[in-house]
Length: 435
Image (cartoon, rainbow, N blue to C red):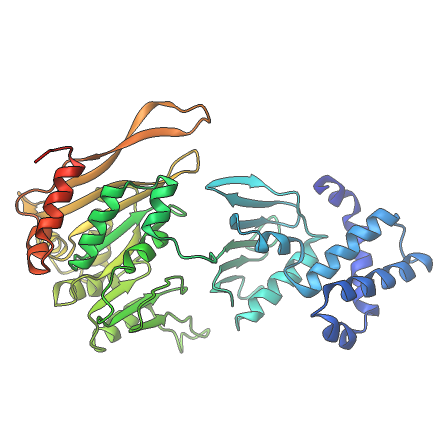
């Protein structure tokens, strides 16, 4: 059907324009709550256009076109069904005739398409307007959060060479728990219990991974074990975290006007959050100079704070933190930066989306300190990939536990929170040691 769209793009586009010229918009506004009535009204208008010689399209084409215009009026146009499909995580529009979706970690091309570039641009502008922003040639980029929580990114010509581009990261209807992640094979029960203990003992945790690897999902799962009596402040560019506790304050960054007025950065939020008497601070994603304030929070009594960042390994995550601190405090010597990081961060959870679409916790790494000018780490758990795939072509492997070192901060934390026996038993069991 996508190929047919190229063939009929001009004629279908002309019919669409005529439909919107003829439609009684006040009536349509009243009928919006009933898509079937809107569809009948659109079908009637298209019939009149065809009968009057205003267009040469077949009955089948008229039916498809009426449905597409109806979807545009009452929803998201051609991507309306994709927005409602719970199996779809990402919708990627590369111009009017190229739409990709991600299901289960795998990208595939959809058979959906827009009538033409004008329809795509109109729908994109409407979505952008819904979030209180504008997009035009002087402001061709918009990144925002949709009313349902989904993340929306729109790029229009002249920057988008092949037509308007939209990227939508859908906001899931359910909150994933460790039980769900174990069922999906993202980690095993020993790892989940270890992370529960780490969260309850108020370890500072960084979740590291690539785009779409499950960083926010992991952060949401971890946040479920924050105490009800604790005051938690979440800071995000686009609110995605779903904490279930009562005492949670959610803050979100804000883009400013053309001259920068009204802009609130992540660093602004962090500096202010430190004045709001938080027990824990959770930063949705750390990507710049705000890293200095985040580590400062972790190092000054706000134990149990958490954040995510983009990196491919735990070692890369530490390097990125070093670079981000230099952005904020360029005068600090490198050894001081390394000491600052090692005294602030306790654990790094590395998550990845494998080539077959699976999402895995590749390692849980403890940051131990600095020796000979280098940050010393230890992999408590890691996923070891096997050479052969299973019958379904999926990557196989096993989760291996190397245990905690004696000087681990978690041993001290577990003693303080009366979880030492539970932690020791878990480590023995995870390592296959019988007592």
